[in-house]
Image 1 (spheres, rainbow over the protein chains, first blue to last red):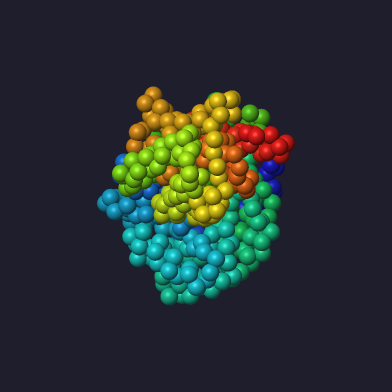
Image 2 (cartoon, chains in turn green, yellow):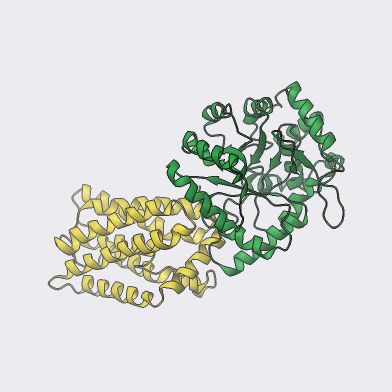
Length: 311
Length: 213
């Protein structure tokens, strides 16, 4: 755990300013029926804007064939889109999550804002295409926006496949993932590969190791960053729930701990999108509230860190 | 790190039981038969009990883990293979070579063994009766690993002789089950693995000191 924020590079700060300026801190993001402006961020490789809060599916959408639980998750997904969500992230490793996402997508009338992100997770390069085809079928989509190499498993083999898929239009972006701060050295090495668009790793208000090297490198390489485990799989929410939000949380339009923690993550200039996961509609509403209102600046981020580390 | 939560687990168990019905009746009859053969041994009892235990482990490994749970748990094939190995060991040592023999003594270890065997059959139904678990999600000995493990260790506590390696996989499985119960926040699921580990350690401790258990 770091005691203070790493100094941000000039390029990262410029990127942040450009992102926020052009991207609708208060304006140009997608809006739902109430016309509330949503915060979006730009994918560095082509400038496309996506909502800064996405949705993860690890554990939360792995409910098998149970009809009642599938219906509950479909309602969570519906809320995600109702509140301006875009990126949905999953993996073949997540059991039935992809099938449950596909079930939910079929029940939702308007999924035009979907930014579909999954992963290839298999030891053999030769079985990657079949696995990705199965994922497309489970989601019920024709192509993924983003295909990532899960935990760098056989990354040098799969990246060849993904390059060919991108060239053929079967995917739009290529990414790599890790979590829990594992294998950062190798991850950093792979981040130098050409043709990468996205990187995904763990970043939250207490797990800030990524600020040392991965986030600055992503900015330097022009890579979009997906922050996973923004709540440390709910541990942060559970830990902080007994404590009040600071009185100044209103200055950044935070009404609950979920928004406080998410706004910290997405206010990092190099972070493109955070992907909290939940099983509950009310929690999804809380999460998506982080797409609205003001974000903390650098000094406010320092203040947020000091506050939670004192709890 | 486990890829599902408690709700998903119980939903899975309910669907699993529905899919296998009425195999539960056969499994319970086999378990009751094994108990009778241990309490009233006769020629060939060890072979038959070994075969019943082997079938229970093979079923839990192949059907529970490999066929069903693998839909939501990417680690389950590994557990499935481990339990199949245990089933094959039971088949080889017990059913084929006849290296299992049992006798019930009215001493504390005999009653403890009987308590374990009954717990394997009755623990989850009682939990369901108390309203703390859905009846549909009750795990049945011979078809699910937790009651199968406790049933096996309980019977081995009554065994006159058996190879200690038959305890290795049950104890390893129990440790992983403790981790799962803790991670999923299901305190009731801690009981059977803890009982199995305690009994397994007791058997090993007694055996290494040359004392009959």
